[in-house]
Image (cartoon, rainbow, N blue to C red; front, side, top):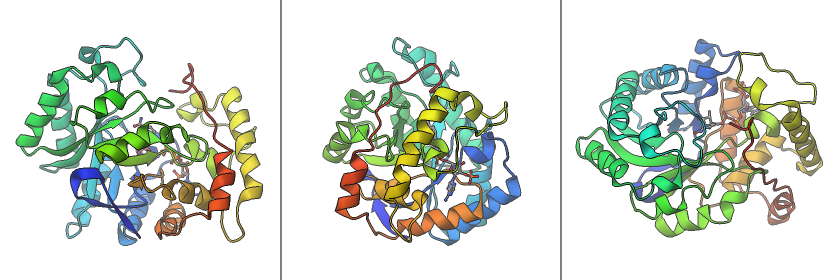
Length: 323
Ligand SMILES: NC(=O)c1ccc[n+]([C@@H]2O[C@H](COP(=O)([O-])OP(=O)(O)OC[C@H]3O[C@@H](n4cnc5c(N)ncnc54)[C@H](OP(=O)(O)O)[C@@H]3O)[C@@H](O)[C@H]2O)c1
């Protein structure tokens, strides 16, 4: 496993981090299998774990706390997120800070996350939605500064809304943000336009999330894939989205080099960009952990393939189903 600088924090994080949503919120999760997968990831050098209070109302955080205690001799970086007070994902233009992150709510949920995790300090606390219009409201920054001084958090991040990478640019310029978490993958290349150059200039850590486009880029889905009704993917992969996603993924299959898989190519595409500090595939199975972690070996995709993949950029705009 190779490690990269996490912006200005001084942390060295594994190129392959760990996304912990699925194991606490998607159907088909098995806690024992998730625990074995997490343990394996640590053994293979993964040291960055992304969770959120909202992933199973603290369940994912509790799984992470247990993991940290099982591997007490190793430094594992904990990244979690504060849910918006109004419980609406994503935030919408016009929402005010008081609806989502008033100071008392930031403090309350930091305390809840500390308790779920069973730790004294959270390495990275992130806002789980964001509106750039909140940039100039001093209250969130002051609250985070107080939490840092109290030793409860070490760094602050924004998790930007799906397909809105630019809805954070003014906030990053305040100097109060240490990292951004953004959807970046073979389809979603828009963060390269404005967000990544700004992160580079300001030395802000970059977490590339949803590396497989919620599963499309694993190549496993067909137009007929059906998700259980109580799985959020049944509301996200509506026919309009599923059909288009499968078509876009199918076009990539002939480009996969010999000896590689589509998932390898998807992760290596992301890691071929030096601005990315870590990418966090969602994983619940040991086979997936093994397959993904080998791609954190520092081998980038060749320039001709990267140039070809640039053509598969797919710009999408938020819709009523995109969440
Ligand atoms: N708003 C936000 O802040 C936000 C939103 C979305 C996601 N996130 C974060 O980003 C993380 C990653 O996104 P995601 O989990 O939504 O989607 P993703 O990483 O794009 O895709 C996850 C899916 O890929 C499958 N998978 C993983 N490795 C595989 C492999 N080698 N071969 C075949 N299939 C493989 C997983 O299966 P198994 O689960 O069965 O292993 C799961 O079904 C989340 O876990 C979460 O931490 C944050």
